[in-house]
Image (tube, rainbow, N blue to C red; front, side, top):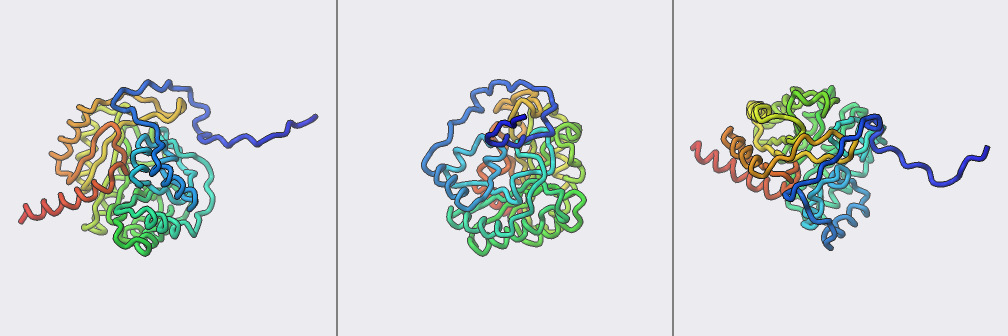
Length: 319
């Protein structure tokens, strides 16, 4: 028998979703439509990422804001590879068996931050359940490398949950990022279907512990809406986050990456997001970003300046 020759088939990006029935992707409303990227600054940012062999969550997660952010030379660097050990139903990052961490990656991230002249940078990663520390030491080395290459740049980390990784959180916090971000993503009731490898109360406790380890650290978390949650559940998440002393909340519309991903239950209107923002601020968050296109890293630099100003104003008011 002759075996046909030719290029090998591309690996399946989401093998765990292949058996799922298709969920049709609804047409986006006008307020969610964005221009296709292509500005010179966007292309320059993409070229730099390629030259330094760096991954970005902007590309891997198919973020709708990539054109706007990269045009402003803002890119969220994704360390520890581009393959995740989890299989969240909402996420477009590839699932599978990752390679060993690239020991030179922290240095290249520092080079990219310096080359882009960033005032603020966000560093995130895939989940690395295969590593004994979940990638915490790699995060710490990346923070150190950025500080060496760009001392004036403020650093925000968006970490995985470090489930069953003793001492991982302490390692990251000891490296002194300016913002510690970990997303709850959705309400507790939907975790089994949306975020099956995670535990809501573990993630909540992680945020609480980060603040206890360093009270001066800004903490941040975010959720998506439109997955099937109701308003009462969102308000309970807000209350839980405030109990953990989280400073900054982001709320954005869930967008379905493919027909095999979790279906969109509904599109929230800009007016509904405005209500959530008001309710969040009323609960004591220093800052709430809530809009259809809000993502964890969207406008992160400007938001950090506002976050710092809000804390100063709050301390002044307390007298």
